[in-house]
Length: 180
Image (tube, rainbow, N blue to C red; front, side, top):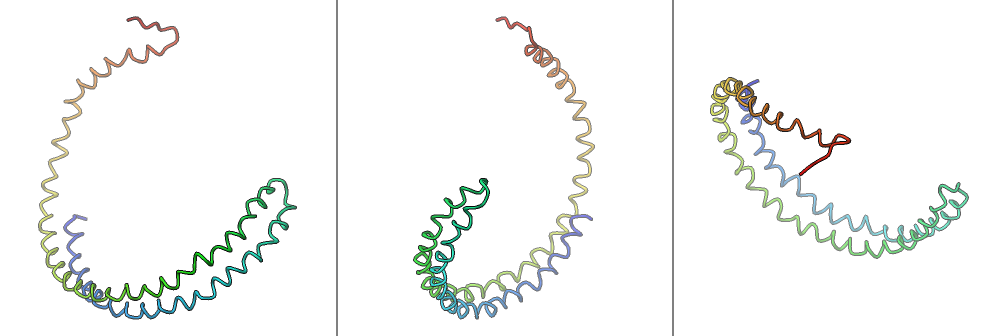
């Protein structure tokens, strides 16, 4: 299929984009409320994570009888309970950070509001592209004929290079002496 025929439907395909982009602010409107609820959802996580070390404490004793192949595993798991105890402290600032996200996202709908109008002229800008590309196949049609003599023109050069390189592998043969 010629390139112009491929591009011709693009403006029609892009026509609904501005309308879709106008809807983005409405779609984003509930996001701040949803994000405000995230800290409440995360509130029990530190307490749950505090309990994980106690649940994992017997794991090394359960693993110890595993065949010798797995003997290093208890040593590897020994620090895990202490590491997990530190996770609640690492997560403590997360609810406060998440509370700030709605404020960060509040201007996004206003920032996106002009985008549909900015994109409105794009289909009209793309409409002439197929006509601009129409002559390209005709311009490229003579290229194979222009390139066809190149191998014959280069053959003397490649033959000369082959002749010059022929002795090169001989210097690597056993018993070859190199003299200066």
